[in-house]
Length: 458
Image 1 (cartoon, one colour):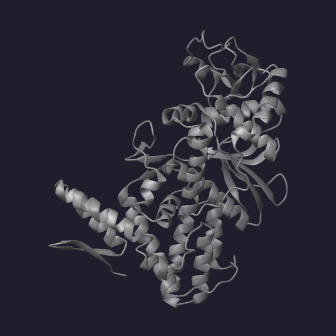
Image 2: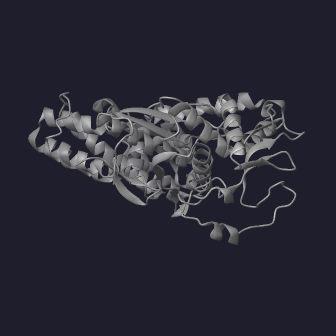
Image 3: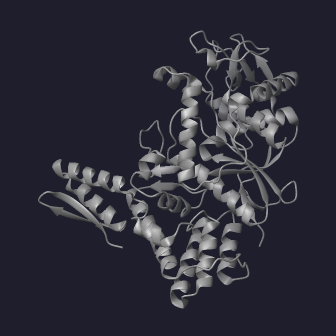
């Protein structure tokens, strides 16, 4: 069976082939770096990390581009609030992004362009659009894209112009000719810091968000890429606008496959900063080890919603420890994956069907059962190798298990302190929950007259 991928553009699963045989060019929209990454960012990075890993396991060379948006209204606002230069803020947040991604075992992208390094390419693209009658400068100095002049607008999101018109509000003061039009170049405001302005034929200003990705994608990967991806929240308007810009300028498809990962929810409500119900990666890693968080994300299909809860993470941790316990009991023998093996073939079939990680993980547990039954080091090696296709099971099993699934002493001490505070506040449910969380990780608490102590029960 060959690889098949769900294409958001056509709304169906299609057999995959790359434009250049053996080489996949993949562009993934990255983060706007004004704050540390949250679980939604982890989910998106993880989805395309696995896509890349499986493409490479399937014999492709992958050029993986993930951009960094380092100029944006939110960045300017946060830098002003902090009283620091924009570059100081974004550099710090980019470092934090790398730390979080590395902790979760993400492969670094092949290229990681920063928007501020590609402003000339953005201006050149805007000029091409203006030359084709698809862009105009408004009375306020901003340059806008003329949406109604692009015949294919709405084909990715399924939104028609009639639907968009139903929500129109007449815009007079903002310089737009049409309420549907979106900004390509924002003219500088007197109150904005100097490092938020670039000179151009349109005057001092900065690029709009959408034009950034069109320019960087085209400059680094060419006019048509094999895969363009990101979170489901980017499908409209960001990716729809990218299509309008790139295809309006070049006259060829921007991407052959559009891929979008599902939302992260909490109590079945979309997790977002605006709702205040999100967790940063760092907050989660203070309580759960990185392998557990990775395993939790991969147990759900990348296109489905991922519902966050402590109970789900606790279950993921216990399940992952069972796999590591197998590798601890039966030392793996390293060897290339034999794809004719029944378990390897099942794993491949699952991944070839739109990166079916839930089914692939189920194969790992079936294989672990066979390892436990046969005590075969060769099969244990296959278990570890297949796990590696997902970025799992690559740590030394004994070390992983003895470390309380990645908890160091400072993290254990922090949870003990949180439990003490919960007991003092008579929040006994939370106190009991912390005790159980630690026990699942192999840490047993003992309350004494002078305080609480702990010991490993591996």
